[in-house]
Image 1 (cartoon, each protein chain N blue to C red):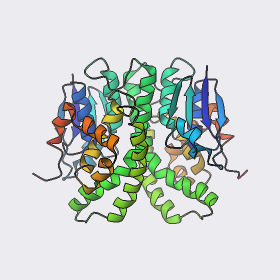
Image 2 (tube, chains in turn cyan, purple; image 1 turned 120 degrees about the vertical axis):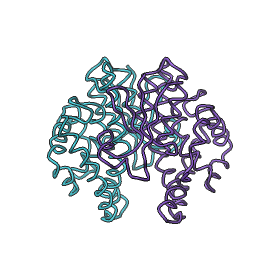
Image 3 (cartoon, rainbow over the protein chains, first blue to last red; image 1 turned 30 degrees about the vertical axis):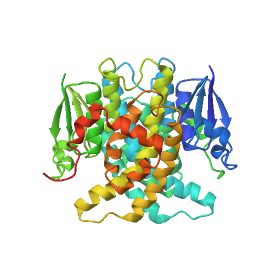
Image 4 (spheres, rainbow over the protein chains, first blue to last red; image 1 turned 135 degrees about the vertical axis):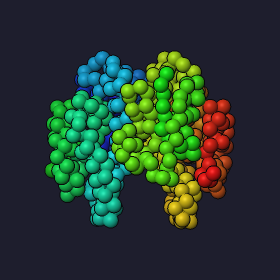
Length: 217
Length: 217
């Protein structure tokens, strides 16, 4: 098995893929990309991903980028190995995994990403977190999580009563959110909070979370 | 076959799904949702999509929302019918379709949506297009299209030398963009322009363009 993941352990998108690889019990090599040196914006790496972002996966002669394309590829190629993240044997369940995977992409992610950026990345660039941006996006995220709260009142996980790739995709950004004052947006919603506590304590993620810090130990 | 699509003929996301249906030569019923009356934000519709957005697909007892989840579901369920949008028999090609589908979701869509909103939707709400927003997003879109230009210099379509779901997902928003002064961002890039002319003249998409206008009839 020749899975090589180019990325960095504190990176949200790398962690999304690492969690998937662990859920599937797959062997792989993590090749570190030096973000602080701008390695991801330089020609050797740009050949792997012209958008200059981590992670990128090499599987023999195939190179895949965009973390959610990588997880989808891995979950499908290795569907018989480890945990079944895509419910491939049940067309209805598989469809709902697709729906809630897109919800993460199109509804959750655009609201949470700017908040994480302000709290964790802006300071690395010498700026204070911009509270206006945080507040505006927390308002959006609150509305999304109101819908999650209602959904999670009737099912244990997002796509149904089974953990799936849809839940997994939320882990890295939500993990960082929970380290900030913005954690209240989760904690104030009991079903969302219970769902978070469940999915974030899965062994596959706990392994990955150990590497997820920006030096604030 | 009991495919029922709830949506509207001018809606970008509805058209994304309609194009997919036509490529697969599928029978379906389009149930109009009255956006001007806010039908999509009212309880009967919210039971289908709690996010209050069109389109929604009902396939017997399965209800799906998020246009890219619907197209993915349809392309997979009916992979043996009509045009093969996902290259299901070739693992490497299928992986490339996943990659460039995610590129559309996370690189292309966030840049183009605000531009199309300013030109097409803001006036319906009584506002002039905000040139600052348009310019900022055109700058982002241009950088993305520079990468597309390089990519399309080596392959005919985004995922390879074959038309796929990845290309299809770009159709509706780009169609509206090309009706505005912002069309130059495509026209200035010869390979992107040629790709656009190719994919937008496919019969499955041309069928829809009659209904794609924001003029209240």
